[in-house]
Length: 140
Image (cartoon, one colour):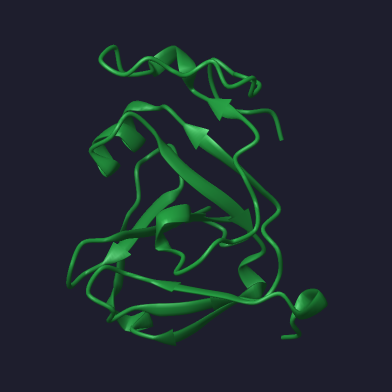
């Protein structure tokens, strides 16, 4: 696995048991306002970066990662020790979205869209930030 243009950023869970490094710049970042993200994060939205799973190296704690697979979506993966949400992945392992809060430092990308805004929390208005909004899933 080679680092893309010298890019490398590390991250991990709250307790530090799970550690990873990303060796290529994220593809895209965005906010998700779906009710699953609200319940998973305890906030009005989740913010993640899409990455190439082949560019992620598990430095420690990979065996501590557990997940919940909803019947109609991506597997939600978290640390089984501290419960920190780390990423989601497609059932076929071809797509991966790392939670931005899991990075130790700036991953070098900013959110560029908002999806599932039709499900936005009534108690947290979506800011007028100029980002494109999709009522459901963002077109790929």
